[in-house]
Structures are given as C-alpha cells and as structure tokens.
Length: 113
Length: 110
Image 1 (cartoon, chains in turn yellow, purple):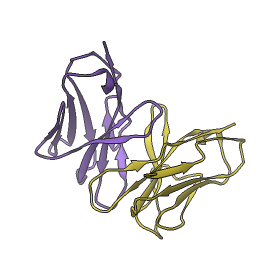
Image 2 (cartoon, each protein chain N blue to C red):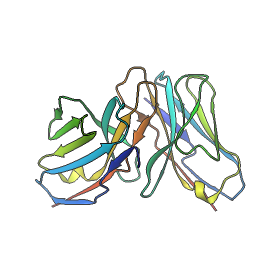
Image 3 (cartoon, helix red, strand yellow):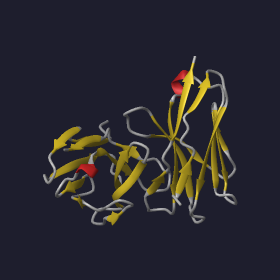
C-alpha cells in the first residue's frame, strides 16, 4: 500500500523560483494537510483541506498556495521561494471520524538558496 | 502562548528507566488528544490516543487532565528503540487540523 506519496523528496531552489510539491493519498481520506517542520519549531500547519473543494489556512500560510485537485491530491505551491521557506514539508491525510491518526508522507526536503 | 507546549528535553535515560513527558494545551475546548512518535528524519507516526480515563498500551501509559489542560506520557522499562522525539498533539474539534507541540526528545542509552 502506497499510503501518502509526496514528490519530490529533495529540491534545491534559488530565491524567487517557483515550485509545486505534489501529494497524493490512496486511502480515500477526506482531509489532507500540509505541515512544515523546522529545527526547534516542531510541525506547523500551512494549509489544510477538510474535504474536496475546500481549503483553509493554518498557522503559517504566507508565501504558499494550495490546490485540492480532487479527493486524492493536494498540492502546495511556492510562487516565489525565499530562504525562510527552507524546511522539511510533510503532507498528511486523515479519514472520517476522529481517530486522530494522520498518515504522513515521507517528507520533502526543500532548500532555498 | 503556544497552543500546545512541551518540555523539549532532551531526556537522557538508561535502559530500564521510567520516564514521563508532560504537555499542556491552551484551548479548553480541545476535544481529542494524541501522542505521536517521530524518528530522526522520518515522518511522525501515531503512538497512542489519550482518553480521559487514561489508557495503557504495553509499556506506555497516557493520561489526560482536562481541568488542568494537561497530558502526560509515561514510558516504563525504556528500550534503546524508544529513542525518538515524542509529539503531543491536540485536535480543537472534529474536522479541524491537528496541532502539534514542538516535541520532547528521548535518548535511551545502554
């Protein structure tokens, strides 16, 4: 079972470049999330989508846009990358009910020079 | 004040020790509580949910005190394989995102 798949796993960008992180889940989950993780900061929510067709801002949305393309896919776009966006990005999904179990992708390590 | 706060540690303990982690949350309307585990450079994974009555899973015991807005995780008979970062996680209400604490790092040595 693939679970949650993120691409790319590694990326180096120059300041001002744009890129899209892709995320897909095959568990038929309604909710999907993008978090970033920085040393000493823990996981911080960027955006989430409670269901297909809806998206909401999290704690740190500035500089990012998201698209819930369909139930399976939730992409994160950096329009003009900045060094402050150097981080590890995790996509996650969760099914219905309140079990609390988020299923994470393996992470995307992004460096902005 | 951060919504979910944890002692970052690190906690350095010998094998066989008992160690406890604490977590506080600021939103009294929070509904669900969890502990996640994250190994170095890996994705977080659910360790256990936390119920008001307290719950146990083998060597792990989780407690919730709603009045004090406090969550704990107790690990008994620590193993080398328990070395990881433990994340306290809170859900404000159903359908909203989970909020993570910064994590507590545990290092178990032989």
